[in-house]
Image 1 (tube, rainbow, N blue to C red):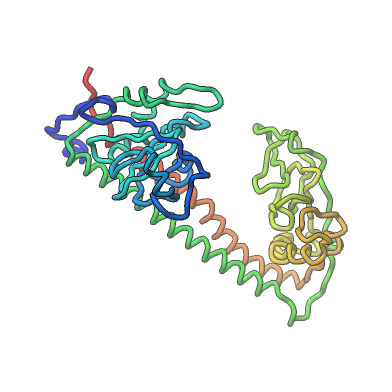
Image 2 (tube, one colour):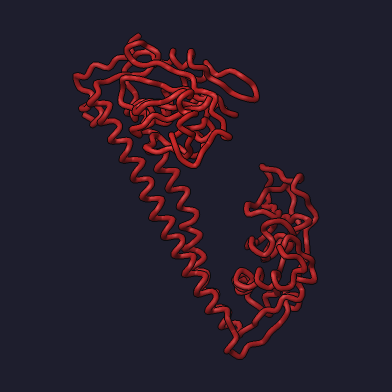
Length: 391
């Protein structure tokens, strides 16, 4: 027997409408606008904040209104839910937060207050669940602005187990959210530490101020040029990687080059900061640059790490504008590169590649791990809120 089965063994669960007089009632929010905010006073929640600032519950508000304004406002009490009744998309409409503070708070229009007899967090978790989301879809109206009014919210059915079972469900779901937050914090801290370590060793290994070394320009050791495509040429089903000017490569059904090269943006926010490592066949944007090192002269991966460490500082000094937003080929050609022996290049590459792999694996693993935790939470949330519904 599963834990859920044991939890619900012999328990009677009722299904009732949210607006049933024994369950709760909805009250529309008032005319609160952003211009009414004050630095202190009575707490308030504006409906737009529900999408960006609040989670399942809160003890504090982000903003305030004056005492005078609060006297004529619609107020939520401890335990009430504040619900956004409008949104630009179906997913966000009816985003809710349980107010657990001890004071009254003002609530804006385009939101409503749900006063009820249930565990506040239990109701807030229910508003997230598939059981609620599936029911609300039939009541959404509007085109550009999607809306669910309070009268229709009242019709949505909620399972109501005994209050002790509600509390236990809340305890379990709270623990999932807490564990996810702890894991995210730990992995983010680990990633930050590894990136700092990588930057430190890269700076140390690629600093040749006190060492005898040959210097060459990037133009002497590499073929440098741009592509011929525009972003509108991209095809999400394309066979080949298409490097444009952003962080994320696109796809294309034709290729321009087949080589080992380093790719960077010729203009935009990624100038001197975003570098891609290209191997094999790829397509290139007309304002992105390829740097293809001569393998007989220099290790291409050495050039990659050297550019990461030094190129942005170089173009900041040589750029005529206060902010670097555009690059021209001569700036690439004249970039000075320290060229130690091929053996020393290989040693440096071996060390820095290990750090690069480590930081990349953590960086790629972090969102995946968080996504897995989120799916696990959503699975148990919907499982814990799945009660037999009478015919």
